[in-house]
Length: 226
Picture (cartoon, rainbow, N blue to C red):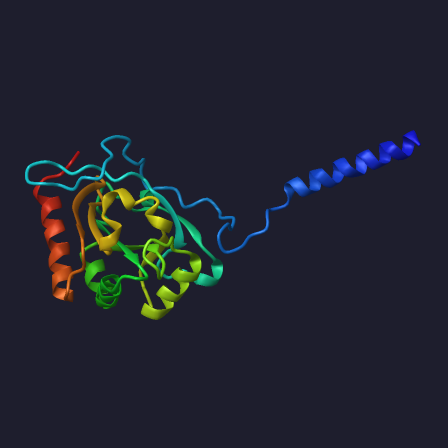
């Protein structure tokens, strides 16, 4: 009996050891992701906040928020991937000059209108060294946290060529804007992560979008937060 008990205990311990090495099951809201690519340079450690530049006052730096989504060109069949703002920090400005973040809600007609306008502007943005990042915050009913089942149709409907992630219920970026007035648009200086502009509402034309980007570039050239 003692031998049988020992064997039974050994079997249970072996089973526990095996189960502890197994990956947990995945589903829509809790997949398991690999580590994101390392940043090109150490991310700034101070000066974080939500204020954009105003007159002679420098803007705050945006923190290194992390999300789950799809990088531009990713096959959605790969599943959601970790994305961090640190991936776009570029002190030299050799690859990126401006990081534009557009926070949207599925319920927002203005979010849809702006997205439709910006889709064909990829080449114009790349020529300016601008990366356009879309943050899907809310689902069809206002205030409902966005899920992957909202994200995938958004990409398919607009044939979106940009990086897009989930920020369910405005969990990360909510302090920057009034969620009832989505979309929110912000321009970040990729060399310093200073918030140059921050506004709610949507531009009405492609020309207005590009004019706003050019103004952000001018601000970054005019004075630089070190």
